[in-house]
Structure formats: structure tokens, C-alpha cells
Image (tube, rainbow, N blue to C red; front, side, top):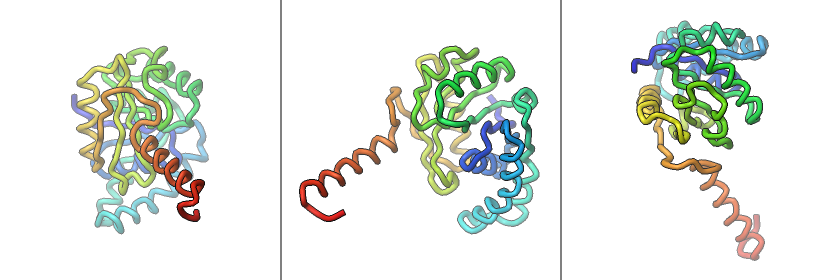
Length: 213
């Protein structure tokens, strides 16, 4: 399917980065948040994100201005979702809040919409169990400083259609990231499991007197 319109739900630090990065790569973006002040803060941060893209990626001022012009803001979920081809959700890591959100979003978005959750701790199958069209939800976990950290961990649920995963991974590549597919759901996904394994080994080295912290 053709993806033109991206809605980012949750416009905090990472949500703002994802919104700007998507707009920079020629997608029309709606930044949604329930808090008008969060949207105002994001609007004020767009020029800062633009400067980072100029410094880190060699973007021109014209490209930054064009990206900013592709972003609109909304506190109305129905309005934000009505034309969405792809939704990327970055709301708080609370399963009850996310389940309620997806139940509502599944009723509001078009039947074609793909839903990506940016969770780093929750599995997609229990998250989407009460959602309409849960075959179109999957995890797409970005890392902070999304334009510099290429990894996006992609993980479908037991219901996710293969073509939904394929389309999403293609979009992630288009916006400059490197998606890695998990073939099975596993808590912590990839990055956090590797990072915690390193932390455990570091603690073991210190506790066994091998080195100082």
C-alpha cells in the first residue's frame, strides 16, 4: 500500500523526533497529543530539530523549512486519525492507557491504517487484544535521537499480517532508519536485552573484585 500520511500520537521527545524525521522524508505528518502545551512545545522545538538535521545529516535550510511545513498539530484524535495511512504511537508506557487508546483509535482510523507502537517494554499481542483490526498493529521501537540511532526494532503480534510488517519496514527504511525484525515476541526486544546482559556482566566484574566501578 502507498503511505503518504503519517500521524504521530504522543508529541514528547521521541514522538517529536519521529514526526520531524517523517516530514523531512516527504510524508505529511499530523502530530497529535491530548495536551495543547505539549504541542506548543513541539512547535517551538522544530527549529532545534532542524538544526540537528543540518549539523548531523547535512540538510539544507530549505529542506528543514519544507519539513516543518509538512507538520500540522491536533488535540482531536478523530481529526488526527481520519486520513492516516500510518500511525506511530509514542504515548506513556502504561498498558491500560495504551489498550484504551488503541480501542478508541481502531474505531476512528480508516480500515487501511497501519498502527505502530513505539513501546520498548510491552508485547504487541496483549496490547492489541481488544482492538479492532489488530492484524494491522505491530511494534516499531525507535531509539532516542532517532535520526542518529538507526535501529528500529520491529515485532508483530500473533495476528499481524505479513504484508503489514513488510510495508512498515519499507517505510522505516525510507525515513533513514534500519529496521530489524523479531521473529518472536520477547520481553525487552533486542537492544534492552543486550544492554542488560552487559550491565549484569559489569556488576559481576566489580562484585568479584576484578575491577573498580
